[in-house]
Length: 149
Image 1 (cartoon, rainbow, N blue to C red):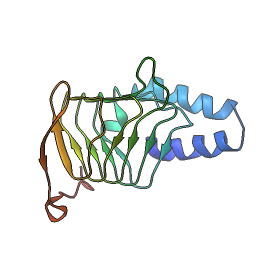
Image 2: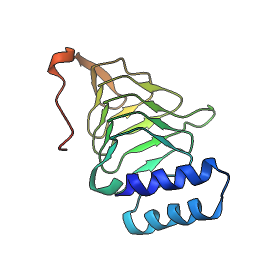
Image 3: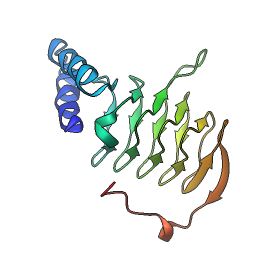
Image 4: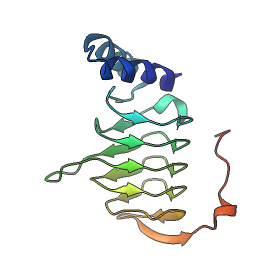
């Protein structure tokens, strides 16, 4: 539901209509506890689990198709650095994870719960810890289907 609201807010924002996108942003801030600016680029099939409860997303972030963002995730900037994270197609960001700075989380990569990612994550990788470290590279055929997440 929140992704559909965001699509409307993003379209209006791109058409330079400021008030309605701002009101939609305030609505889901109050209703769902999520900070999702209308300028964020969400791809098709993105899943924000539990309507994005407790999630904060940077205004310049890009989240590509079929990415899964769990609850309590921060996708944000990093002091002193310009830019925001890019979450590539099919990536999974675990509950409470922090993805900080102008980095890229590769296609179908997985970020473990409560991990702090401050470096690029390669495609198909699994990273965990504080700071996040690579523990495995999955084979493309081993990637789970998160569409029912």
